Image 1 (cartoon, rainbow, N blue to C red):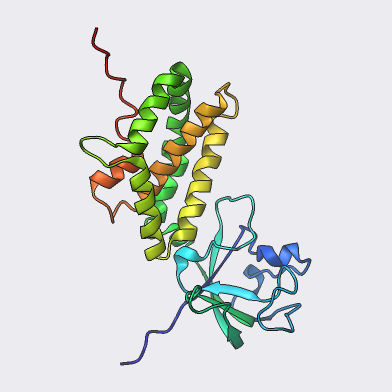
Image 2 (tube, one colour):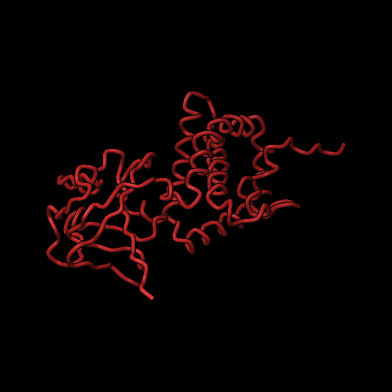
Length: 257
């Protein structure tokens, strides 16, 4: 049976320019070249060495890794996602460690597609959490911490180390999420998701007097909630609730007299 053709992806910022090409002073705009063949403006002479910041085209066949090593900084959304066809000689740094990645000096831009899969199979749901839920919750998370720093520090430690009767520990759930992201080739997606979540907290708390520790607490709650959305169809509530920190938003249990 014939093998299914491989689809190769490149991610760019919203203007369509490959970010590393911009940094190198030889901007390549995929949006201006749909259907066209693009030759690398300054290809490396030693395959496949980084003779400059932009020595070859980099593409991946696992869309959840397309945001790795793009040069896009700071992390932002939206990005644009492109299907490309590698032409001519191709290579790889290491097929053992980068089996999903390909390098070439020539590509054809096939089409632009929906960018949400770059954040994983649940990319739309992740963005809903980042753009809708986190802004609504960040202020409360920070206020909870600053209202009772010692009490919240103890509760956070218990959640991270012990979990609760209906969910695992936060650290265990974080480690599991990272491993599953790696197994599903969504490590870059998870990294990007966590950056987006923290950026959203910064925006939500920009005009507040929240302490640094309150912000760090809000970061942990936001990233956990966003990563739970990434894996919502893979994990049971026992894991998802651990990522979300279920129980930390409820009032602290009363201490017996």
